Length: 242
Length: 95
Picture 1 (cartoon, each protein chain N blue to C red):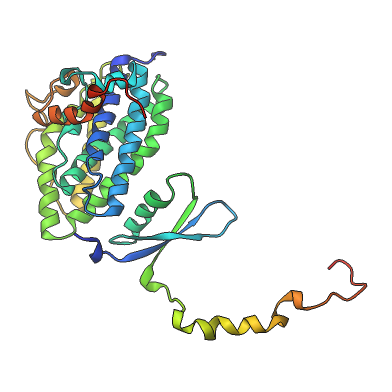
Picture 2 (picture 1 turned 90 degrees about the horizontal axis):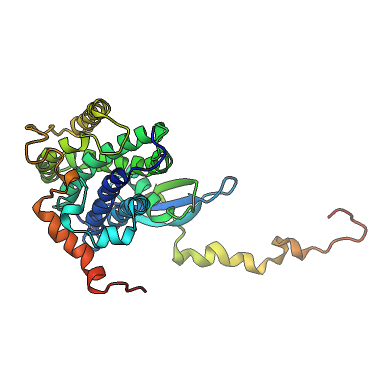
């Protein structure tokens, strides 16, 4: 057991939350219906709250969010993937929220330095997971078009899901614990996908180029543009406030 | 997917234990489960509630504005329907 927070771990978890919050925030003004826009913004704000706490543990939250270069971010490649259509976003939410809830559940149950934070966040992630599952069921069981779109989203993001279960530097979860987490994740996702009348994508969930790459600062093409949008205001007007 | 295809729901929120559910507003949702979730996001994100009801707006029978007079007007000229009409007799205690 460690008593002090490991900064590398805080950065990894904080970056996951920050980057996904930014992605979900992009839906503001663009969601298919007003009610869903509010739902996605709420989830984004929950994640932003988590990111602020975690990044503050790792250093100055604003500096970390706005002044780091792409290669210094430690988030999973999954969360930086572009929103695509609504079904694509829901597929990303399903993969990530199930993972995040299982991970925070583990951390909350332990006695490590992240336990108090995880205990609070796990209630939020439970709702994120519920939101993603409800929508996966409805899109899968909806029209031909909604089924086709959500199936395409699940397939496109499948190759980014293996990275989630590599041990995170600084967390008390070794390869064995992460493998157990992965088995639970796979069972949970499979259950939702099958209940929705969809099929679990085939193919590798990790490859030479995705294996733990995001956690080491190697990111995919869409990330640079997302980062430019997220950071440009702060970089153009350093120290500005309102 | 457009909002017009989704039915309207009326949302009732109970703010605290012991109080009754009060009408908070309305929203669109494809079904009751999603209506409940949308209501949670729209109306209870700032600790406003401990319980939510959603009711299909179509299930609400409302009095018609055209019937306002027959429904509500007659009571105004019958002051004896209000307790203040009656004088309290002398000597009655504990009233």
